[in-house]
Amino acid sequence: MDSQNIMFVILAVLIVLSSLATVMTKSIVRAATYLLFVLLGTAGLYFLMGFTFLGAVQVMVYAGGIIVLYVFSILLTEGAKDETFKRKAKDASWGLLLSLVGFGAFITIVLTQKFKAQVLTAPVESTNAVTSIRSIGDHMLSTGEGGYLLPFEAVSILLLACIVGALIIARKR
Image (cartoon, rainbow, N blue to C red; front, side, top):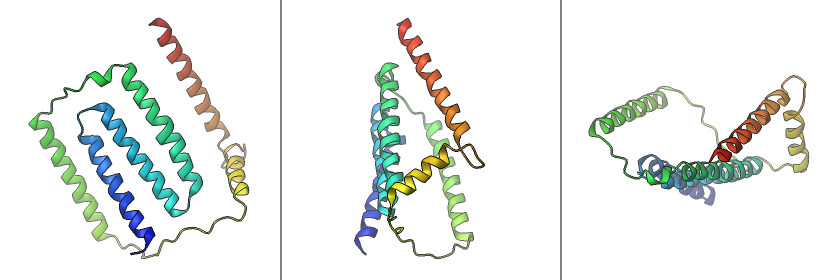
């Protein structure tokens, strides 16, 4: 095994174990911390495949912003005090049954489909990385066909409404 495969296995194990810990822990703050490890592992996979822009966005937006948002939400709503979550055997049996059904469906799909065997290699680095990022920005903010200016503006208005709503809620306290 070469170093890329070893790193892939390490990141995959980190992601799987952190994902399991996220859904199995009783503390919501710990679940957010484990989710951070999942998102950082995913960013590591992006970097390993050579998608540095996607990896950087994953770290900044998801591992940085979203986890901070989750932790603030948990702490501001006093969700951290709710550490006495009791699981019932009935709920656990339903969860186990649904997990086994999902795993069975996954195995069935993997075994019945014919996948083309291709060797994945890291993409060739662009000679001018600024051009590729610039083209992404131009495409996102273009008004032509395939442009994302309208959804971009809709999301910005939604975020502005969320900020105003948060300020109104915070002012009442």
